[in-house]
Image (cartoon, rainbow, N blue to C red):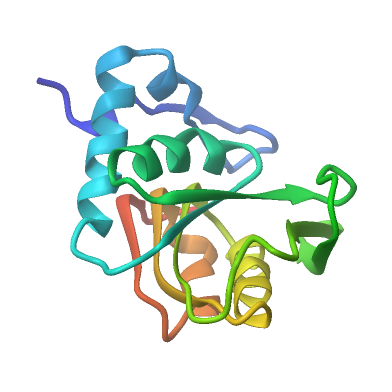
Length: 174
């Protein structure tokens, strides 16, 4: 059986020279790779006490939804600004070249609910840091954060200090 790392395609010098792009689509398009990825991520959170899985748009939906389903938990999407139909709370955060805004429905998290955040990749940590602020602003508690891949060279984990962060695959570089 292949290791999960074997399903990830690495593309050198994309989007710019010196960068190795870690392509998750090759995990998704292989039935065994997809199942292995979800199983390994689910294993990282299986012993946590939580009520809700949050997945940021869009790959957090892909990995978070089956984990929520398998563990009989609710799933809450976090979306880009303007995509959710009801009353939302939003958070702006820094990108490498500018800013972005994410939103969550105002009624998605009740005070005291425990949340696990699931996403495909941690790079600089800005998106997840913004999600944590949204969850905590609604009275929720983030009890775990799990990624399929971590680009350790970008030090995103430092922004999430004090939280239970795990990753299935850890790449030393950027």
